[in-house]
Structures are given as C-alpha cells and as structure tokens.
Length: 265
Length: 245
Image 1 (tube, rainbow over the protein chains, first blue to last red):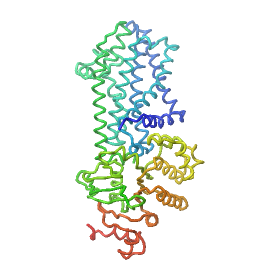
Image 2 (tube, chains in turn brown, red):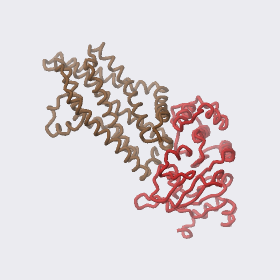
Image 3 (cartoon, helix red, strand yellow):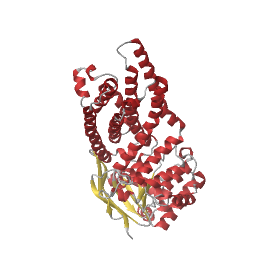
Image 4 (cartoon, chains in turn red, brown):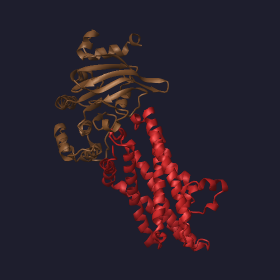
C-alpha cells in the first residue's frame, strides 16, 4: 500500500488548527526567538564596542544565535507535536487510525518546519533594523546550513519521540533538555579549539560543529569550505537513519510493552 | 453468519505476568458480544491486541478474514474504538476534529459523512463548539461520531456509557442497537453496566485473571448460575476464587 498524502495532510491539519486557533501558541512561537535574538544582539554590541578582539562579533554571534535557535525550535517543535497528543489523550486515537509510521513522521516533520519558520522569520527581520545585520550575508550556503540544522533538529526530535514511545510520558523531561546537553559540543558561539581535547573528539562526530564552523568561516574569512558542509550532511545522514530505525524499534517495543494503550494515563 | 472478529488462542505476557492466557472467541456480523470481567481481568489487554496497539505473545487475530499481524493498516481502516479514557484534541472544534479524522481515514465525501453523523447523533448544534468545552454526554456523542466516521465493520467499545446520565446513556444504547442492525457490523462491548450488557449483547464472555471463565447468552448464564440477573452472575463468578483458579 502506498503512502497517503491525504493522511499526511490530515495530521498536519490537526496541528495547524491547534496553532491557528490559539493566539498564545502563536505568540509563544514568535516571542522566544525574537527575545533571544534581541538579547544576543545587545550583548554582542557591548563586546564589539569594548574589545578589539570582537571586531565582527555582532554579525557572527547573531547569525549563530539565529541558526541555533532554528535548530532548537525544530527539535522542540517536533517533540511538542508528539507531546500534544499525549497531553490531549489523543494518542490512542492517532495510533488506531490507519496511519503508517512514515506518514506520521512525514506529517510531523512538515509541521515542525512550519512551526520553526513562524518563530524564525520575525527574529530574522528584527536583526536588520535593530543591529544592521542580515543573515543573508551567508549567501547561497545559508540554505545548506539551514537544511543541515533542520535535519539534525528533526533527528533529535525523532530520537526523543522514540524515547516517549518506549518509556512513556516520564521521558518528557529529556525532551526539554536534549538541546542543552548537546549545545556545548556544537561550538555554536566559539571555535572548536576552545573545547578540551576529549570534548573535541565528541564534537567532531556531531554535524553541529561543521555547520557553525562554516557559518563563522563564511562571515569572518569570506571563504567557503565545502568540506564542512559535506561532513555535516554525512553525519546528518547517519544520525537521521539511526533515529528512524530507533523510532520503528521503539514502536514495536511499545506494542510489546503496552505503552501505546497506557500513554497519557 | 460470517465472523468479522476471530480470536485464536491469544496470549499476552508482560515479563513473567500472564495478562491474557490463551483465549479464543468469534464475533459474527450483526452481533454485539459483551466482554465482562473485574478490573485487571484482561479486557483492556484483549481490546488493545484487537486494535493492534499490543502485540500478542502468541495466537492469531483475524478481522474480516484478514490476519491482523500482516494487514494492520487495511484492518485499521475498517475498525474503530471508543473509550472514556481517550479523548479528541480539546482545543479543536467538533467539526475540525471530525474533519481531521475523516482525512486520516481517507473518507471521500467528508461533508456528507459529517452531516449524516451529526443528524444521527444529534451533534449538529455542537459542530462549531470547542471539543474541550463540551459536557461528558456531548463529548461521548462526538467520540462516537469520530468512531463511526470510517463506517467501521468492527466497533470496539470500552465503557461507552460510563459517567453518562440515564437519558444520554439510553440514547447511546438505542443508537448502537439501530446502527448495528442497519449496517450489520460487529461490536465488542466491554462494560461494567450489566443492564446495558443484558439489553445489547447476544452473548457474553466472562473474563477473570486473563482467562474466559464462562460464556453464553445472558439469559442462559443467569439460568445456569441460578441467579436473577447478570450482575449477580458477575458477582458470583468474580468472587469465586476456588471454582475457577
């Protein structure tokens, strides 16, 4: 049987209705990225005017803050979509509908992108009038960096959702903390040499370090190192495949353990 | 009559605990089968296995002659479920919820289907209401509408009238009787309301500790156990440890 676009659209609609019916939800999506960018903008301005080292600080830090926020929003957004089903006790209804796992994941992946963009676009628009910075300075490679971050954000979301499937709602706290655990290894605001050697080894097996190193490389050196983009995609492909396999494994484990019928209890 | 549900010797173990110990039963089309038993007797586990939410440790389930293990999606298209323990998204309107689930079940004429169910279940005036703001009786009718959106051949009901006032409860029972007769569907009804079971079910299964300890027509079971109603039979069977263990 083929993948059904109707069912993918149906599940997308469920979340679209939820978002558009609730002003606080839209505000929540827009509020945090905008506050984050504004805060980082002023901090970067302060450093730039008080030290000679941070010549290009505002542009670099703000760009990295926007990229990181996109990653964070994508990952949290995906988890939120899954958690919404648990909180609303709709989980069983969803899993007794004739939906393939691939259709559920595809729908959530698309919805998570839209949620992230709702938050990201106002934040990007703010940086220009407030700080004279445009993320578009990254050029065409901006697309590849965003794509890499999106894939990794979704990957983390799928990994956490696998945990929710396998262990139930008690896994919820992990959903909120994943990004904070990985952030130091992502080298978002500093070069990888800043990390102790053992941490560098961990960082090199994550796609994040290649993405943020490349963003800094483009902005500071005005050159493009295609290897960074390439390695980011290679690691992304690895972790994404792993997350999909783990999700299927967790789904089957949940069917054995009974988590699917007790979810939300 | 054709069997729409065939359960063959299914077992479910959670580690060393045997939740369901090899039970078998059939439900014919145009039949309501009652699934009775005290809490923890294995009713929910059995329903979970029929819905594909739980994998049996052993045994086989056939829905409309299709093996569940190999035809999960195809079977889920012709089955549905209602329980007071699951809800529809609270922030969506009734109409949005029915529309979303119509899409998930790939219903062709969604507008007509929602209109039909609204009329039958008297929820027309609720369509634009927020689902979370409805009374329990209204929520129950909306959940039933969702459960019928795909015109299921098999309907699984877990306590469908729990916490409803007598008028709404009677409306739901009458509706289920008429709908089953009209569409020739099979219904598996898990309930603790013995009057409801006596009224609706052609036959019942009594479960205890994961086993079927007795089965038959409600009137036959009442006569067999020398009691005056099904509730007394239920109490006798659920309290008699030595007789069945």
